[in-house]
Image 1 (tube, rainbow, N blue to C red):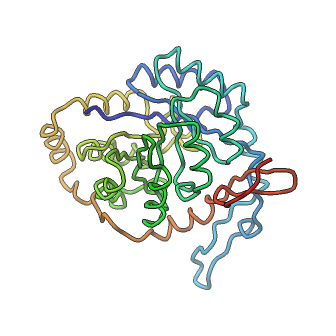
Image 2: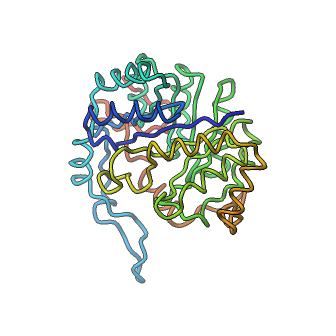
Length: 320
């Protein structure tokens, strides 16, 4: 079975619709099955006091990430896409011959994009345990991709129960940016198959230093899909550029995917003799870096109704 390739444009378009258009068409021409954006709304960024200055212990080790609200709001506001542009994105993907995919970051965001024609919905790692939001999403999409980085095993199990009856795929993911090869824990792909037969991989390794080995090993292990940040710019021209792949790299993955499994493993073992360091543990504790990222990113965005801030995991929250 062919591995799906998801080209995640994220915010590598830098808020420029013409760059995004080029990204759509080059990704499609290179063999991407889905092209994805993020339905981030800077107005939904939440202010949380403890991230203004962060926190360190007596030894200087970080206990809370420092990410001031004002600085982040200014950065994100320059990258916002309007809802009209998001609808345009769906149509442009259709013209390019690929499927449109998005990630929403709030429950109100679900309502805003539900009628735009997206072929599927992607749920970010930090919302894997936002069960009310998952319930909202399954009302409008049958095809759902959901990352599992920075998520506890019991939360993953419950997410699978919530999504039962849909065509959902879990994506193994490690929320370290960039992810070193020894932190990949690709054994998790097999572990996640107890919840769904379709398990993919969302990769944040750095192509400049680790090539495409993480994706290639995942493909050889039978990953149902590969999601990679995607760019047509130089690595230093966008925030996610260093962990993004190019059109040529998409083609390389597509060519590798077409090989027989035995040939795939021959290439891996010859090109990366210590490939087993990528396998890690199937059941593991989250690293300190992942826990810090979970602490910040889970709740980074929320629905804002009047004066109320409604987080994605809040049960019985009234959105209107």
